[in-house]
Image (cartoon, rainbow, N blue to C red; front, side, top):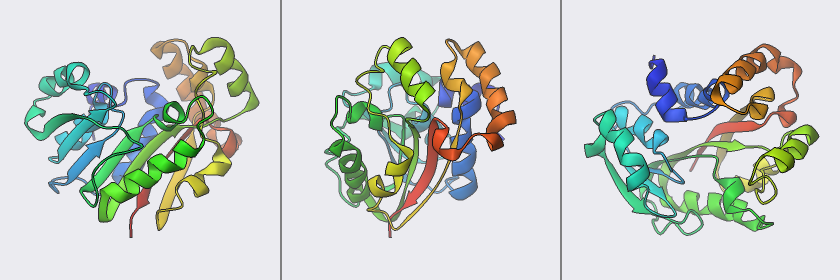
Length: 229
């Protein structure tokens, strides 16, 4: 089991809710000591690259602009820098085919497809599909539109709330339809309303207690694994 500080460095925000993606991935995908060739998209701080590298995989840590300046410090801190390289990669035009064993991302679809570019949701996933080797796997965690309350409060309090194009629960099957097998779950409701990490941690614990009472389509995080045949 990973220590809390490492999980915090990997997940970065709303640790209580988003870390459930890590648990799901670890349960469904064996990534330890496989020497997999991996790609993280939209990495920013490089947390997911850190997770893959600490499990002895090689990772391209990427964003639209190279995240070397924002992510390399974290990787040096955990002594995994020798397993990571940095690249500028557009997730809608990845440029690799049949290259990776694992592609991973967290919270990128809404930004990529923002300002009404809904077609870019599926285009991004299709690009990932092409970049994976046969039997390769996509590990994903993404913000969902969730409830009307989430829609309203994001527009009012989140500076990118009006332009972000949140993935809808009923879009998931179509957006990921290029994959032969997709397994996923959803989590989180109140955690999205926290204004700082202390609040999000408290609200995330409430989410854990009330999870069974919140419909899957009204939760605000989806995470899963998609496998390429």
